[in-house]
Amino acid sequence: MDTSTFQFEQFQSFSPYAEIGPYRAKDYWKLPEGEPVELLRGRLIMSPSPSSLHQTVIARLICILQRAEDTADGLMFVSPMDVILSDDTILQPDLLYIVKERRGIVGERVMGAPDLVIEILSPGSNRRDRTEKLDLYTKYGVAEYWIVDPETQLFEFLLLEQGRYTIVQPADNAYQSPRLPEIEFNLATFWQEVQRRLSHS
Amino acid sequence: MSIGTPQYESLPGFSPPSSLGPHRAADYWKLPEGEPVELIQGRLIVSPSPNEFHQTLSALLTELLLGASRQGGGRMFAAPMDVVLSDDSVVQPDLIYVAKPRREIVKGRVNGAPDLVVEILSKNDARRDRVDKMNLYAEHGVAEYWIVDPDARQFDFLINRDGRFEVQPQHDDCYQSPRLPELAINLSDFWAEVQRHVGGEPGTQASPGPLNQS
Image (tube, rainbow over all chains, first blue to last red; front, side, top):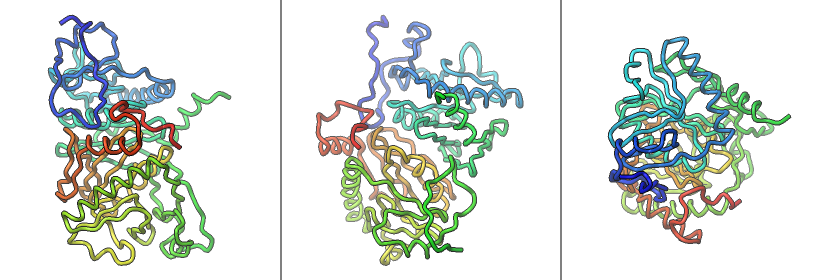
């Protein structure tokens, strides 16, 4: 199948598709390298162009994950990095972290579920990140999933427990991952830093 | 501990504070009736005025929950309805459902955690519903919590497990509560119905939704 015939999904419906779409990993690999595309249950989706706010948030999260790498010998990646979850699902999370013991899943690409995935919402990706992707990360066993909304300065920390995500609420602006103690930060400081970088003074 | 003059706050942090604010239920009852205020862990928070789209969703969800109450024998209420969760927390959720076995908690007001709370997000206050109120509902035993995002046309279905909310995965169009079978919704039908009420061609936009509506 020549890639010019590929159809990219717009996700117009208001609920997840029950059935798997037509594309598979081999179709995905045919796409030009560097295309911001993901393969989600057999459907090809284009990632939106990230905004300066989105990229600033990513930059601050990289700092937090790099600290974790240094502390605990884990491995972090920032998008674009292919995470192969199955033959019909290859995603490019905004950020991911893999603990030292599981570094073996990293070859040329990441083959399997990272220990932490972070998705930063953009207008339009909201539903996909909260429903389709959440469902996939649950299914493939991503132990911890953060949803970050830069517009409302919101973090949601989801921990996989017995096959479902439970929402963890930090108190007093301090979060430390219960599973990955090397990952910790202060939410108030975080958003102040983002604000500082984006304000024009 | 209660104080004489009410002090209104906007919720300050990016996560719930661990300490209680200064106000209690006694202060809340002294406020003029009909004030759009909630008492959340000792702090008085003014609710934003809901807009036209919010109210449309509220009306359609009322219809859904009325159907549920006819089926299951429970009771539903739309805001404003005081829900007394504790001495430091009295809230007015957008919608609530109390299942048949627990109908006695409704006496004038709702004294205790409803079986279902539904909150419709306001654009600028998502954090209140997703963080502070979520924390409150989790701690006080609200068994099920639905968060509706009007702009993204998206529901979060959350079930309380030992004081924390568990996200229910969405595989397709339909959701049915694992706890109360009368609480069920077809998402495609619901949002199509919303679209019909709001006007415009159905299905022409998945997002960003009515950002132009104030």
